[in-house]
Image (tube, rainbow, N blue to C red):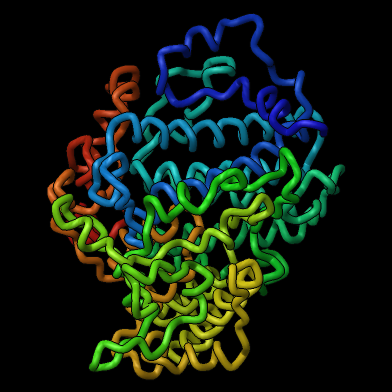
Length: 524
């Protein structure tokens, strides 16, 4: 492949959404559109993998970090996501991105079946679920069973919205189907196309089943989903359901740095990436820095100088300390709150070859720690502690590899990890609320992993976030979901209205999604 962008254009030309736009009829009747059979399934793989990874990084930076208080854009009022100023155009773009990628994954699945490419058939199901899980987690009830059927006989341009419970059940089935295909050990014909696993089907299978664990954990608050039994089935059958066992299994896409295999922020600079806008927040700083009774910073999480860097301007940061701005701060207080605030570490992230991660081993260990603590899997608190410390260790070790790219290279030793695990920031034995400790450390480990920290906050309520006095645009409520876009409401109104009625709220950012802590507590 000489030009990934050209392949992306060809492979994605059939991309459509769930009745998001007004061009469904044209798409379904246009005789010039590309049809199944005219594209090689392998031609769709690279755009799905590489561009998807870039979308994950971009959404981390643009949406997740602002909503969940890793960063706050305080460089003016052009961007106010941390104040929850989010418009219909934003809802539309997020809806379109996830549906476009999911639709093309399904298209690759169809092509794979036509062309007897079992490896890509399994991968297509894994990626479809990856993208669709984020769509439903952002919006709630969405089309799944009838989604993307317009190009097929008896398909529809107005698919029904399945309940989120039904969506999750269908995603579980798709992952189980994919796992069965991986188990046949299909051959990936062109390993060089795969910048994540080099065509290794065993690792793809581990990703598939680790993603299954993520989604089981997401709905674990709903007893009817029987997630404990399903988790135990996975853990008791490692040959049938292999999962991540080390950082070597991480679902991380490696970019060469050469066009077109370049990271999302390859052409950015420190100014547009962080210093002129996005600053680290006091929320992140207080969770990664220990301060004594006199206000002196006495210890820091070894990941912090990899995630960010202290403001180098001695005029605003004369003591050379970690300082965070206030997420959701009012416009009138913004300048004061922002003074001396730390930045994202552009040297680490703004590189043509900076990798993008869909999921990692640390997340799997955090899932198992929570499951053991809550009795969903055996072992109780002793097992939970082991899983938890393995999770923190894996997270620090993954980020330690990135420390070499910092302006001042960051080296993390085994002793540094031991010190973190015994510090007041991360000590299991010292924590009075183990569930909160797991949630807080998982939050830190999910830095720049798509929208996962935002999803997990709504599920668990951790960490304990403080809503700023300027977060006026959603009545001081951190968005519980994104609203269905106007075009969706206009073109598929009956089905969308039924979904809203089922979710028990209006089409706004205050209605909780079905698996969330809020919905469960409110009995929705």
